[in-house]
Length: 382
Ligand SMILES: Cc1cc2nc3c(=O)[nH]c(=O)nc-3n(C[C@H](O)[C@H](O)[C@H](O)COP(=O)(O)OP(=O)(O)OC[C@H]3O[C@@H](n4cnc5c(N)ncnc54)[C@H](O)[C@@H]3O)c2cc1C
Figure (cartoon, rainbow, N blue to C red):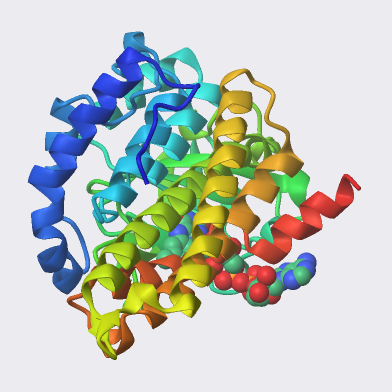
């Protein structure tokens, strides 16, 4: 399907897209197989991305960012999905972590962390999930207790994206363990040489093999009190809720692009593969199914483009962002399943991109808030 320039884009955004595409095709896609085997990207790729201005593109230039808007984050997510090069965790790093710092950090905190995130000197992660607590975020057990000029952190986190390389971890912790949501704060942990901080193994997953997803452990970790994000304890839950629509939207952007890419691969294959003396595409079942997929792709694209335009105007509400997240990721999984079928046995072979589109899709319904939680949120506004 020919990609036309979305209404929310302009020449600068498209120039950034060209830059991102060239980088992903040259520096990432050729290494994806090796990264999948080692279960993480090479550390240097973060610095290369930083040198090119691909990290923190929507952070103000005075803090080392690109000075653009969310449109740049969106095209990067699109191009990663298009290039089948999803392993570099820029969505977490730039779209989420840098924006927590930018939105809630003090001037000193922004100057301390944002330029180093933009250059790739720091790799960002956000650590919410714990072995015993995922969806029920108010129930996190990790503690950050103030002692003099420091916070002392104890607890463990799991499934943390960029967990192996991250050296700046926005950590969700209870500064007041007696309280639920009101006891939660975000504490920024710079991990290099930090006593008491350890990483577990990089977790083996069924998809997204090149992404480093890891456990993190905090055992009496001491950080300066100045690392509390913002100036007031107990703001963490609100800060998370305010930023999550952007996180959910970027997942929807990746989902709709993956749907389009899946359709493109399947059209190419079914037009070339023959059975019973004709292309697989010529069977009515194939044509009808792919007509349905094309319709889904179109509806998803129109919806997500509208969400992006609303977000750029500061008008994307929590319920609509949740709708975009659950619906597009559900469609992504459905489409990947339907389309893989047309590849027959080849669809089950790891060397065929369709198999990666299928396995990589599955997590989309789970992270960033499960799709059940999305529906729970939407229902609150009904
Ligand atoms: C590859 C990967 C990357 C990830 N990256 C990160 C990261 O960078 N940072 C981070 O903090 N976390 C990350 N996560 C964790 C992810 O966000 C959680 O797995 C997710 O939020 C669900 O939490 P859980 O696994 O504990 O499931 P649970 O919360 O135990 O949920 C289990 C099931 O119960 C359902 N459920 C729970 N509550 C309700 C309810 N109220 N109503 C209806 N159904 C409900 C859920 O939808 C789910 O189906 C990642 C996970 C993976 C697998």
